[in-house]
Length: 430
Image (tube, rainbow, N blue to C red):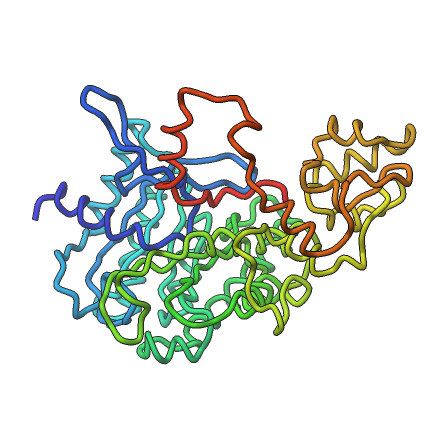
């Protein structure tokens, strides 16, 4: 098979693995135009120092000995199959890099023959790349069930590694992916965490310590293929962050690829809005000091799709509001809808000079259309409505009427795009 044909098959097959960030765009090229964001093959991720880098995103192989019910590349599917050689992946990466198409590589794979054989091939790729002086960013997907020595050896050559947990519970794993075992996923995660801890400790002693996964480890789970609630999913994510020092948990809305009675209907659309809410909830766990049990509970196990998770939490916990903006601690400020990490610090700094009023908050960057229902400034409440959950919810989900905004010749075009576009996975301040 020609290399170009392999690249087409294996870049397209890689789109189901979201253990790196993507632009989320599906803009196609036009006749005579330049570039395209719709084809698989290029994704974006962020380095440890915050730089955005473009990565060649491919599978080493879409052959697989497993027959996971939800997977497009499962053994029993009649799809075009291809497998690179380590040399081919090295040449593709170097050639793409020299042409300034990419700054790094995201490499995953189906399980060919067995986990050890597959991991050996992936290790050969990253080892050859480094030996040929490639210093770009490499994100490698570790293969669950492979020998820990192979995973450790690969960690010496790559910047980040992901061991995908796939499904949010052991019960779902047994049902939809019976050949995979929970232990084969969690044990490599624990081993990687220990190795990273050792590397960081030795790095403090000597700056010549050989690098080991400087950008840490991530994982991915599929949302909507199994019946777990948002509470189950966030509890698992919180455990992964606390237990394995995970850099990031990625959520992938289930894309119907196979027709099976154990799966949602093939006609069902991917739960993209739910995925979006989970990313927002995840953001609150990582940067805002929330816990999963605060955000959700058995009485409310799923997020309200009409509200972002912080607004949802605030409405369910109105006993904590309104908060006086001139007296609240940093931790209390972070829990106010519309106040982000940066704006909370700006409020703390500005209060050293004098008391803040409502207009000062606007200049600081607080999103007042959400925050005004949960705060007072110098004792004055600006929400304009009584503090009842239904009143506030109605105001927060209310959409502006046409006469309340300036008309634009681009309105119809913009609305048609919004109907087609999936919500962005790039989280902002909540």
